[in-house]
Amino acid sequence: MTTADVHRSIETVWRIEAPRLIAGLARMLRDVGQAEDLAQEALVAALERWPRDGVPDNPGAWLMTTARRRAIDLIRHHRMRDDKQDAIGYELAAEAMTHAPDNADALDDDIGDDLLRLIFTACHPVLGRDMQVALTLRMLGGLTTPEIARAFLVPEATVAQRIVRAKRTLADRQVPFEVPHGEELAPRLATVLEVVYLIFNEGYVATAGDDWTRPDLCEEALRLGRVLAGLAPREPEVHGLLALMEIQASRLHARTAGDGTPVLLLDQDRTRWDRLLIRRGLASLERAERLGGADGNYALQAAIAACHARAVHAKDTDWAKIASLYARLATIAPSPVVELNRAVAVSMAEGPQAGLDMLDSLRDARALAGYHLLPSVRGDLLCKLGRRDEARIEFERAASLTRNAREAGLLRQRAAACARVEE
View 1 (tube, one colour):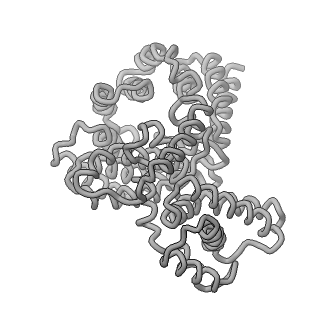
View 2 (cartoon, rainbow, N blue to C red; view 1 turned 45 degrees about the vertical axis):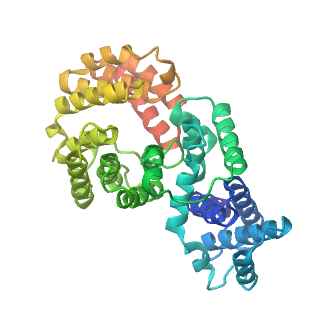
View 3 (cartoon, rainbow, N blue to C red; view 1 turned 90 degrees about the vertical axis):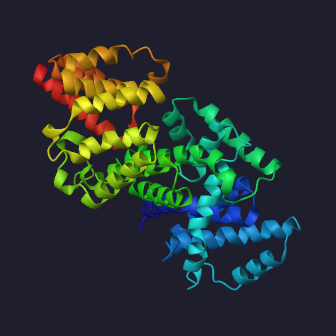
């Protein structure tokens, strides 16, 4: 295996294991910032040693063992040991560095609880909402600062500052690393749901990189959503979010071709959609509606996804209903992105010119200034109207704005197709 291959392996392992690594360290140290720093040190150690020694059989456990040893050293250095920490230190000292049989246990110990504690800690009320979301996406979602900035359409420097302030505030206020219960749960639940939703979205359509999707993030978001549904069974929006994620996740296998090329919704082979996930999602949506949450943000999005799921063929899709659902969504969660999606639905229900008219009213929205989907959708509508030269320009602009290599390739193909027809 070449050094480049090893580095790619390390990058893959890090994307998958970083949230669990940070969560496990945060439980030990009770300091989210220190946990991330030590996780990063373990990553550096892997970059130094794996090209020379080879990738371990259980790379996630290797990272956890390395990071835990550094955590014990830090605890000892600050003279903060208690009996439990001494016991952990003794256990780690007995383990071999890479291939010890107990390494898997080191990684799996309390993983689920630790991740849930981490997300609720990062969403503690001492932090402002923007700091809560940015920190959790960084820690739990594994998103980079540029990826978070693009998700919220804000400058990278703003996101970086929010993350630094959040970690400092949690440390200064000595926020406990725990899942709240009783009356303390509800006030923090809305932000937690938003973060889980954003993690899922990053998995469903990766902001950057060489992959169109990141199924590992979708699976983690689904797992957290199901845990939250157990924690708050009477909260309709919990079930609404779970419904949305399950229905959307049902399409994951159909969203890419064998070579990883993106396959758009209307072109997907619907026989590849996971019918079990669809049934589960529809049941979760029904439960959210029974609990009085039919007009909730996530329930409405789930209802839109359900319209697609119920259509056996793309031509059977009830676009008029989808447009009306987006109109309802716009009243409770107004945003230019919702209006953009509504314009797409209107174009399918009433024709491309109707959608383009709506879309053009959004062209001056500051939040969409660098958002690649605005020129992408506009290019699609212009193409349908036969205005192919204008469409080519929009597709090229969209390709220049996205940071996902697969998406950029698809957009360039569409631009080239417009150019060929013009010739």
